[in-house]
Image 1 (cartoon, helix red, strand yellow):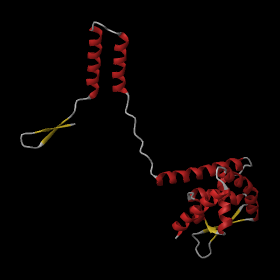
Image 2 (cartoon, rainbow, N blue to C red):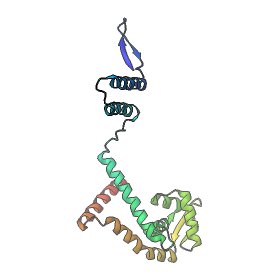
Image 3 (spheres, rainbow, N blue to C red):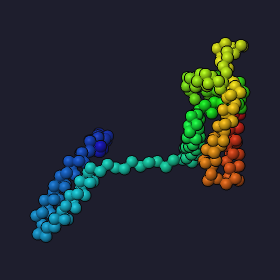
Image 4 (cartoon, rainbow, N blue to C red):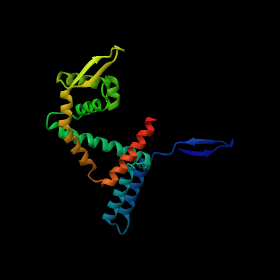
Length: 206
């Protein structure tokens, strides 16, 4: 769109002509001029026409914005988390187990008896999915569920002895997955990473 001055001092706007017909017309004129020139060179004519066609039909490459430092850090943390889960799940699946079941039992071991919805929030899973998983774990004898006596709306979950044994059997596989992901870091770098993560978590929990 192009702006032009009016007699009243204002501006009127006129739509710019479509570049496609203009480029096509220029292509035809260039081709005709080259073919009628005394020293006509077919290869030059073909190259000119091809260049005009490419200029018309090739879309402009979208310029991807450079991510900020914060975006790079957030992306890196998310990718490391996905890789940790994938590595652990691959090892556990060889024994017919899942990383989600391990996460639930591990959280229960650290926190003790917990409300079902709080457990789902702690491991970052949807309550409905966690409820179905806990039902399966209860049928397998790995957890025990009961209504909270002080609040019947709450369902409390705790691991059984069998669940704790399940957790201990799977821990070496998960430790191996963590070691696989941390392999590029030296011991001192791992300590630095741990300290930085704890500092971030302490700030968010305060």
